[in-house]
Length: 330
Ligand SMILES: Nc1nc2c(ncn2[C@@H]2O[C@H](COP(=O)(O)OP(=O)(O)OP(=O)(O)O)[C@@H](O)[C@H]2O)c(=O)[nH]1
Ligand SMILES: [Mg+2]
Image 1 (tube, rainbow, N blue to C red):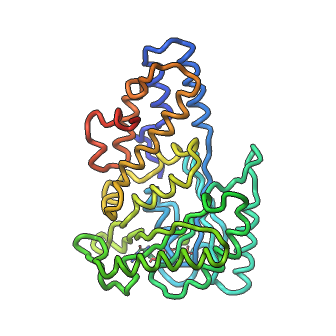
Image 2 (cartoon, rainbow, N blue to C red):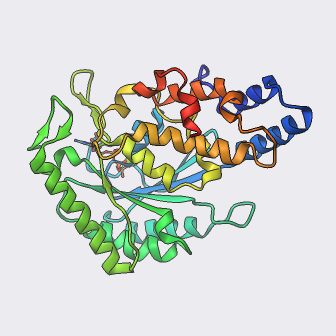
Image 3 (cartoon, rainbow, N blue to C red):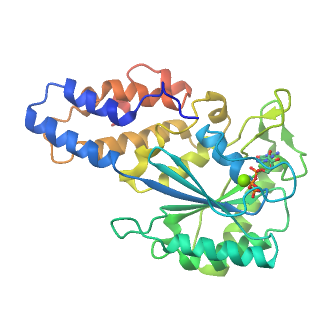
């Protein structure tokens, strides 16, 4: 699972600082800031009904076959599972819909997890990613989960700490109107999905007063070498996850996300997500790594090597563009 060849973003940042022509004082300030960034852990709870695609989503985003993908109707995940990927920690948590007794247990587990604090006394869970099954009309148990279990237990800044993502958008109209060749929805399905997003948003707002920004995507699937489909809007999902992550913690994803370019390729055209993702990492490096150090504005020059590595991480075309890193900080 762990990829030994992968670039470690923090080691790379440190090397860049050591190789720069800054004086010792400023080098030390920068190294201290990088150590601080490196110590940041991010904890994400991923929840949703059985079969909504929690495991598939985890595996697609992080290219780690950590989570078992279900084949039958029985829930694969009976209780909260913890996956540790360096300083990114995922809590794969069953949602509701498995019967009264199981639901009570699941709700209790989620509430307890949301009440946990980290060593600094802050809430342990930075973000709850709720996955809805876009292929079903009946989202009743998902609203129950969001409106009655998660949101009331989220503490302050609720909208920042929940991301609602509608999966399986490819089969939202029973597989019709999905353009398999282009791996994207046609105009009819796009309209249907946009309406679904609005109705989910409305139901949550009516139930809780919290205004969320749901998105739709497909985690894709792989039955065999011949029967597989790449994800759709996975870059968009990652972009939204990063936007919902405190700035200091955003680098925790860099070394962990999938290195397969094809999983990030197909997205809607509303934004250039891979560029936006790289920009937000660049922002974290710019705003956090050089805090208190006098570097004469030359951050692009200092972190040139890391910039190229980060550019390659997401595998998109922009990663290959030479000199891209300077743009990262503009
Ligand atoms: N067509 C399609 N199928 C999907 C998608 N995402 C997941 N699936 C399929 O849905 C089924 C359930 O997916 P899982 O990832 O196991 O769902 P889960 O939420 O982890 O389920 P439990 O662990 O049992 O609660 C599997 O057969 C997946 O291949 C998608 O985007 N599109
Ligand atoms: Mg699962």
